[in-house]
Image (cartoon, rainbow, N blue to C red; front, side, top):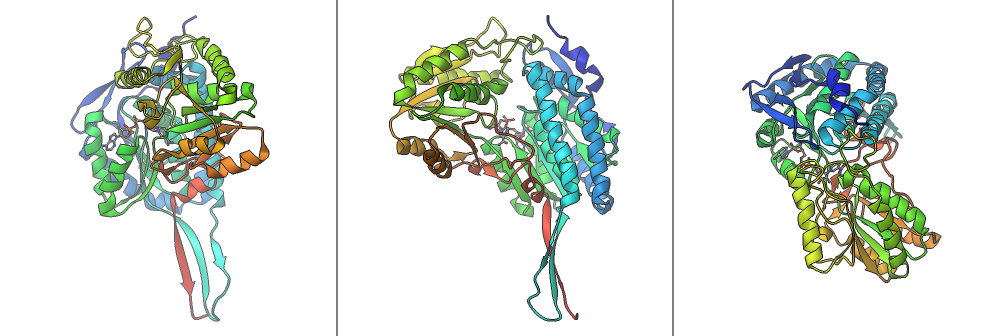
Amino acid sequence: MSINLEEQARALIRADNFIDGQWVAAASGRRFAVTDPATGKLIADVADSGPADAGAAADAAAKALPAWRAKLPKERAAVLHRWHALIVEQQDALGALISLEQGKPLAEGRGEVAYGASYVAWFADEATRIYGDVIPQQQRGKRMSAIKEPIGVVAAITPWNFPLAMIARKIAPALAAGCTVVAKPAEDTPLTAIALVMLAHEAGVPDGVLNLISASRESAAETVGEWLADGRVRKITFTGSTPVGKHLARESAGTLKKLSLELGGNAPFIVFDDADLDAAVTGLLAAKFRNGGQTCVCPNRIYVQRGVYERFSALLSAKVAELQVGPASDPASQIGPMINARAVDKIARHVEDAVANGALVLTGGKRLTELGPHYYAPTVLGNATPDMMLCCEETFGPVAPLFPFDTEQEAVDAANDTPFGLASYFYSQDVRRIDRVSRALEAGIVGINEGALASEAAPFGGVKESGYGREGSKYGLDDYLSIKYLCQGGL
Ligand code: NAD
């Protein structure tokens, strides 16, 4: 039975900017369309903001900062706990809204709500644990200590693949630390972020403390540019592609802001001869095909040792061929549509290039145009080689290319042969190999015999061109704090 997502989500759909506690249209009056990726049908026309709107949001955040940072940590924690309760209360409607604008199956939409909410609860508690240090005395008559203070106004810019979780895990630590926020969600999926801000307001986040503006792809650079040049905005927290991350780093240099960049990945997934193969297949299915492969930690290159290559590829292909593809409104769907035409074109280009260079299609390998314009079949490719496009670039779709290898060193070298370093995975039952390989992999996150890695209690982030900064855990709060050294003399 098909579910009417729009009906379930309707009460949460708003289409205006939220600045200084008010719902306002873009100053220019312009709007842009947000559509359902499964059907191309219009969901809402939202505000297409420009520099004037970004400036108004920054004014509000700067004005609200002194009172918010002066609140007791437990007062900020109480507001965040109320926000968490409202998000959980609205899990079904928020889950339907995520699925409607982003396309992921409804069970995953609801799962994302729980996952995003877990960061809000975590940082509500962390707000009360922002400790400093008393430095052991070095000189008589002098006392030294280090305290942590909110960094100031934070600009948060987020991608479309997790419309709720990505923005929640930026706003929650910023508010917990005592910062105020200006946010711009991705143009494909702004509605979930707008709903989240509406619930934050209901939970008692004071006017001006959290401001959100939406903008089309065409307006994004100019709009965000206003924040990059604004000296009052002290931090940029960004999740998205590496080229845009580099652009933000360059453009914010003029006011020397602190940056957290959660960028693209090209995750390796290594299956050694001594792995539990059933566990490796289960782990790969979870890591690779979640959200239709549109996840920054999705394995992009699967290295399989020659001794188990045939068995592993047969087991995996049989499971992938069974995955149900369809719209989020069908509860049986396990893989939804890709986000837009650009995304599905890139996947098709990567598969065509791989096949032209000798890869074998073990299952899938085609668009599913009978379902709609943005569907691609879950795919396993055999005999992949390093010269293929899908080895160097993130495919961001449901394609698993298998690369055979012979030795541990060869697998580690191939895994590290990329400018990226976000997630990595390997399966082995040899304790010495587990120790060696986890140290040798150049990545911010290593999954060892495990495919599901993200947790609010763990530090999430990359190395190399996957960015810097961490989200989640106690480390996630440090990105929103600056350290002040106090030196008291005359004692
Ligand atoms: P994107 O970089 O195109 O867009 C991300 C955000 O930046 C959007 O809000 C967009 O409007 C904005 N933006 C685009 N151009 C801009 C500009 N010139 N100036 C200012 N803002 C601009 O990325 P995307 O396509 O939305 O997301 C996919 C990418 O995000 C993938 O590379 C994926 O790996 C990455 N990602 C990383 C993580 C992580 O935690 N590391 C998580 C999710 C997604």
